[in-house]
Amino acid sequence: MQRRALVYLIGFIVLILAFVISMMARDSAVLEGFYITFGAFLTLCILSFLYKDNPFYKFAEHLFVGVSAAYWMSMGFWTTLIPNLIGRLHPPAVRLFLPAVADAEPNYWYLIPLALGIILLLRLSAKVGWISRWSLAFVVGTTAGLNFIRYMRSDFIGQIYNTINPLAVYSATDRSFMAMDSISAVVVFFGVFCGIVYFFFSKEHKGAFGAASRVGIYVLMVTFGAGFGYTVMARISLLVGRMRFLFDDWLGMIN
Amino acid sequence: MAFFDTIKNIDRRVIFLFIALSVIVPLLFNVIFPERITPIVQKIFDKIEALPEGSRVLISLDFDPSTAPEQEPMVDAVIYHCCQRNVKLYVMALWGAGQNIADATINRIITTHFPNKVYGVDYVHLGYKAGNQGLINVIITDMKKMYTTDVNGTQIDSIPMMRGVRSLKNMDLIAAFGGGFPGLKEWILFAGDPGNIPVAGGVTAVSAPLLYPYYPNQMLGMMGGIKGAAEYESELIRKYPDFEKMPHGGLEMMGPQAVAHVVIMLFIIIGNVTFFIDRKRKTRAN
Image (tube, rainbow over all chains, first blue to last red; front, top):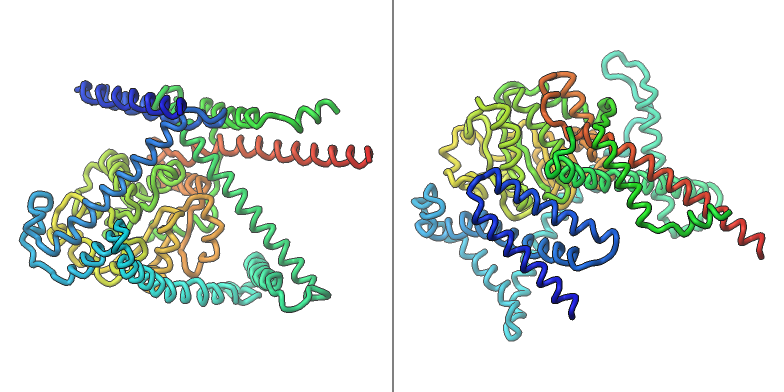
């Protein structure tokens, strides 16, 4: 309990300081400097977790979650609800924020999404919360329907099409044999074939079938290895990004 | 053997320290390695290079600050290239945070380095809209169903470069940046394939292996992680030497990246050697 109180105290002091300084700073350069320093402080708070869990880390984590939630809510309201719902149902109501669309004709078809949205919010009530399933069913059904068609076309048929290519590739211009492209086509075809064999469990993995299955395992291992390598690159990139922020933007040590 | 015992029981924080040093030292000494463009990145470069003046390119920024260090160098390079080629840029976002990132990018690249470009004539910022792949599904037939105004509240019909743009099918290229959901994959599935529109872009390194199968039939080209950005930047410097004067994050980040990879590989080798020695010792003891 004492630890939680400490987190709240640190958070409260830091936020009050941030608010006071941002109110007092009239010069934009001073304000920018303050924001960068505050960003550096939060970065160090998060990195401090590498040593061990501590109240500074907890404060930064809670602040991030809170700010993210507020940001998404605010963005959804101002970029979607105001122009695409209220601006369509009753355009004069948005004259203050979007004068360009205030004189448009109302479109009452948008009462349907409004009703579904209100029904979804009924989930907050224990008594009538069950009605929210109607909206949820609409969302799930529409998404499933949309995704089914697109995934079937692009991920299923499209990927089969991409796999079954000529194994011997010739140049379109002078009809010469392209060795590297042919090797690539052979590797893709047999890699996919052996990978599928590995996941075929209705027949015992023995003989030629077992050999193909073993090649399938190697293909999967290479895939996981590539995935791991790329993941390392991604994580190091983020670390480099933060270090550039600390040593360049904040401390100005990088020439 | 005492050495191997020490290595075996090494505190993970020592490894963190080595990784931090392997990133900080090359950064401070500005270590930059030469890069050569690979075919999958070259295809994007060649496509933009071949676009006639006035062509329409949609740039979708589908990421947030958590992956910005990886994605911003790609976006900067592509937008710089498009501005050099005098194509019209339609900037939008499927992620909420993408809208502010787009604002910052426009300010950093277009306003600063191409002050003669006019908003509404050469580039427009359409902002963020909720809806994920549903949004793409709508704007592939009618953009105005979702975009009544741009990000500043200007009516879409009064923006000169929006005249003649009815749907995504009027775009000559879609360049999507972002490896999460929704991201490049959704642009391929919901716009590129059904609309027969060339789709390219850049993704976080984590997502890159999952997107390779779409190349080259369903996806024009792809920049995978910071390596892809560095390749694009190196080609841009070769073709447009002025780009060298600008910050090129991809090339600058590949130096620390390479050193950190060497350190990680060394730790993997040390970890494996220690494991096998330890196993041998246990077998002998039994």
